[in-house]
Every structure is written in C-alpha cells, then in structure tokens.
Length: 373
Picture 1 (cartoon, one colour):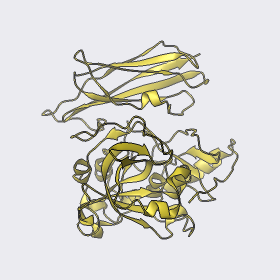
Picture 2 (cartoon, one colour):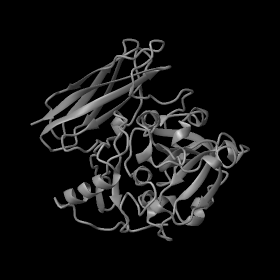
Picture 3 (cartoon, rainbow, N blue to C red):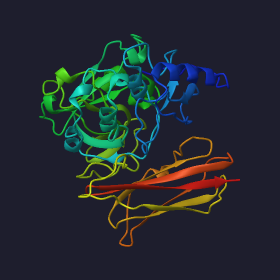
C-alpha cells in the first residue's frame, strides 16, 4: 500500500493552476491556504474553492498525487476536493450516535454541489468540515474500485470501512469512514492491503474530517446509516488490551481524547436561536507581537465548563500543527482556557488565533490577530 509521492516544484506558475481550478469549481467559493506536512514533498498546495463557506473550520489542504489533481478526473469536483484533503487538526471528540443523527436537506441528494440551493448548501456547511474523532468497532473493510477522486487509477483506490457502535451493529446502522490512497501513502505504518482488510473486528478510534457524500441516498438504511462520513481518515488508533496504540507508529497513541456524549463544538455559522444563545469568547495572544521560536500563549475567556479548541493560522497562510494546540480545553470556574506553544513561522505580518467553544447546545467563537515583525 505504500506509494511514492509525485515530486513537483511549487512556483508562482501555480497561480495559473489555481485560476483554472477556480473556473472549474466556481468563483463563489472560498479560497484555501496551503499547509506543509511532514510527508515527502509533492505538489502540495491550497485546496480549490469549495461550494460553500463554513467560516470557522480548518480550510482543506490538498495536493496533486501520482499525477492526479485534487479535483480528480470527473464527477462532482467540489466533493472530490473534500475527499482528497490531507491536512490534520485538533480532533474533537464525537460519539457515533451524534454523527449518525445529523440530518440533511433531501433536495441535495444525487445533486452536484454546484447545483445546490444556497440555503441547502448552508445547512450542509454547518457541520461539514469538523475535525472529529470517534470510537467504534470495524464491521467490514472493502478495497473499492477505481473512482473519479483518484482519477480512476486501478492502483490507487479507497478503503471503504463500516464503523459500528458495537461488533454486532448492522451495516445499515454504521457510519462510513474512508481511507484515501493519498492519505494511506502518508502512513506507511498502516501496512499492506492485507493488514488494512484485516482490521475487521477491531475496536478503534478514527480521526478525520466530517464530510457529506450526497451520492448514495439509496444505501441509507440498507448498507449505511447516514450520508455523513468521516472522509478522509487521518489517524487510526487500535485498542490493544485496553490501551490505544497508534497504527502508524505501533506506539501508545498520544493525546487520545476522551469521548464526549455531545457533538463537538460547532462554530456559529448562522445566528443562534434565542432559546440557546451564543457563547461569548474573548481571545488574547501573549506576547503580541511575537517571533519565531518564542513561547506564545493563546488565552480565551468564555462560560465556565465550556469545551474549547484553538486554531492558529500564521501570516504565511499555513496552520500551526503544534501538538500543544491540538488539545481540547475545558474552561475553568473563572471561564478561562489557554494554550502555549513555540511560534513556528518566520513570516512577518499578521496571523490569527481562533478559539471555538461549546457548552451544551450553545456555541461561540472568538479570534485575535498574531503579529510578527
């Protein structure tokens, strides 16, 4: 299953490619920033615009892999761009029931995203793009056939995984999670095709991106429990005798968060109802200005007991991948949370730290600029 990333050179000519992609996917979409990962160098670049703009979730980062661009070679290119993201985030705990209970507008089923009504697109956008981690039992693993996200390459195919709340769960009530070939290539420790197919029956924690796949409504209630998926999977931990082991490294999984009984925090993309209200989140960064290598702290004040996560985007446009920023913090009795890390960018200018929080049905977000130079 190991694949070699295609080497490409990132130059200003890349702007031309982005312009072409904008024309294909739609000019009304959001722009995306690039992020450097620890994977072998390749044509890593910002994702093309997405059909809708969920403001506070991480923006996808994608790449051309084995000659296949992130939009694939056909089908719904906006959907393919989401399926082919390769970025990571601070994974927020979610339960399978909470994910399976998510709804969607019937009008979007089988329809290309570019044809969705704005109100329907906004409804899907609110939960889509959450960085989630969920626990369950793998009911079945299937190596799929050639598909448009992978340019119909017979050697680069998704692993289709059914995740159930227990080992006896029917596939009709399972959540679909997908291992994309360009992500599998970043995790050689996940093993061969036989090893991945052999995960059937294992108790696992799956971290990845919440995504809506409108293309298979006829399968709901028969071979899947929802059109919502974790796709792509970015992290896999296996239960070995009561300990979580990272499948990629074979070592104890670091920072495996406890599961929650409520959905992960949802940024407020629409005005909240008066029955729930919005959480106020005030954010400061210290010191500010800061500099590369300097210990820097993001502090936020919100409602006591709220669960909060943070995302820092540097002036260069890349998102910090510091482990110290990946934890979910619970606000103290005084309503305070904080994260400290060493600032990881030399680029001068203004970045942004955004904190999202949730407490029951109430949600909120706040941000502050981070200045270098």
